[in-house]
Length: 468
Image (cartoon, rainbow, N blue to C red; front, side):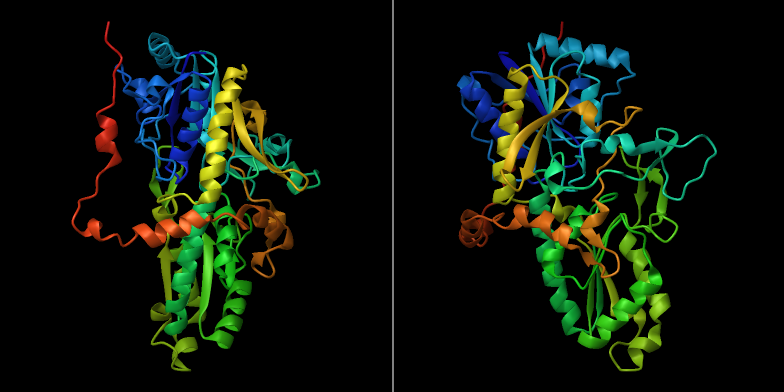
């Protein structure tokens, strides 16, 4: 291979530039050109295919900074439909004109599906990214445990995808942390760092004003981000993988509030009620991936607690003027997606980017670069084929946090969940992370200078496919 393409798709994460940097550095070492496609798959639908040469003369361009969050080549949620053969053929022809010999896609499960449409045209490899940490398998045969329900059949845990209802069968595999496929994905550690500091800061407000705080973190189907936010020491943790027992929750809140005069709850945005329905009220609109948009689990939970606790619980002891005043919510939202990646993400994202290049040059097709962990070897690079993530009907499902990671009676991480987190976060923050904060956050020149966007510089480097 002499020239490969790279794109970033789906939602942004703090580690995307680090992944690109690792790929470009490795490609330069192996004397391979890299073209970065602007705004993900969207560029491939554009007849002019906007792109940026990322390593002219086999040297990374100066704009490519692994410590900078987001992605210098932009991202979108456009994907390639494998059934749209006309579009696939057009894209294949455009890539051929650009003399692209292979493609690296950086993304999650949606990106992996989009990549599938192109794998018959040229070699493709995925470098994973997602703050939700939901791209992977808890064990090698997990994808085979999904069931498509017959038409008309109802199951409380079923959900709709592509016009069919799906649920999981009971797993007969003994879970072992060493057997996880893609143990952790770049972007997750930094998102947990942001969530943890957010919980810590909200704690002092709740503590000072005798209030109950509900902190909502991302993770529609997966509780990994909520689990990681346990480093912020919330009093109660609620995750999407376990149904909410309101009676038990209310009693636990009262127990904590009576003792310490405040309570902090962390909940994933996709937590479900006793019937298995997502707690956040659903709107009629959907996001680009086809998921119904949630108005907010934390707000719905707040309404439930206001009703169940009642005003007198707070006014009788003069702790607050009403339940509505005492209970407040905060969504950490997109702050979890942005900013400078911490050491763990920068290092392993760059490793995975470089590994994706090696996989392409070694002839792997429709494959995924993964970060593995075992007690014996620690973190190390691996590879698996995309079909390992697909169920028997070809769908890729978001990895859910293994139920053993959570204690539903204590409403806290279990010992296995703690064991999962420790290897990731024990040395996840580097000395340079702290030094950059000390040196740059209140740099005086920032008060006089406007923010200089990376897009401004990258835009000067964009090239286009010449029309016939």
